[in-house]
Image 1: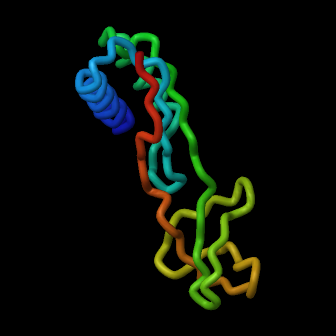
Image 2: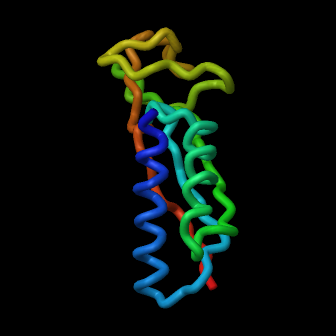
Length: 124
């Protein structure tokens, strides 16, 4: 379960930021989880909630996860588009079963989407 180690890395980063800014309490943490990151968000949240109890600054932290819709680029016409809800295709080089909404081309590639980003942090 690599989500636990990712959650531990996030906690470590939060503690370092709290120390740097002389904050005693971290109240809210917003993280972007890319749709192709391979991270199981429920497991990541569970790991964060378990690990946050071990540190005073993070004990009351609320984790907010944002998962943007997957983006694709059509290799035929260059159109960039997001997939309809529920139609996430794993990135494969130069192919997708999602047709381009502009030209109907089937040769689309995933654009990014593998990120794990600390977007916002609220501290006291």
